[in-house]
Length: 333
Image (cartoon, rainbow, N blue to C red; front, side, top):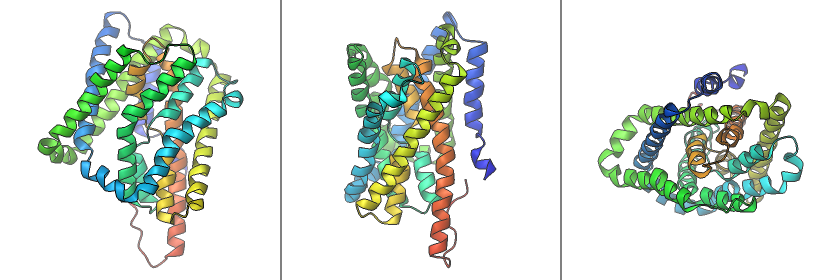
């Protein structure tokens, strides 16, 4: 149980990257070079995701449309509404820029890999989880920028600029479409080399985090985020996750879903994607303090992994108690 609450290697790498950017931030020509390198990594990331995402899996999801509608509603409607409605209660402990990051977190798509993994461990409907998480990831490319544009306009920022829309198309959408087109030739190879996608996935996140925090540190990030503010941000993330878990769990039961579908809804409808969020933040929040924007997402990411790991095991134990004659088919972590 204690191991569940310890950070994994990637989280440690994130912490080290933040530490490195705080001690040795990139600036000048190095910042420009890292910016180009980060853009290339993001394009490669979305190309590989396009090549990996099965069109058959997304199309198959139409047969279980009620479940997917609930997951998408939780991801793209419930979360943003919670962020806006609870703003008078949650915003005071943090700065306006940090709460903008919280609102951005609320607009992001669900995770793919961890949603499926936790659903499998908990003995949920894995095939439905694959479809729901994939559809969420795909739709997030379009829905998240719309939400961000509305947020910026409400803050008097003029909404989404044409430059930002162009970067979304260039860095996110076109590489993803190219990956889908190339899937017939490289799809099997990508599936066989999933660790490669993981390296690009995590590497692009670390690059964005390093450049984002470098710029923010040079602008005085840690002077603006003392420990009490950081503690308030952690509390906000815990509250949002707890409300999402309660809403998806009781909502699934009220709508008459079975236990397997309930598990899928809980794990796919309550999570937010760091892999999609960090690259999107770089594109959508040009000119904003990017370190402030991605910090809530980084904290939420680790909290959701720790909580969902415990929750998945609890679901699995309940399944074993109901059907003690069945073997444990949940995969190891």
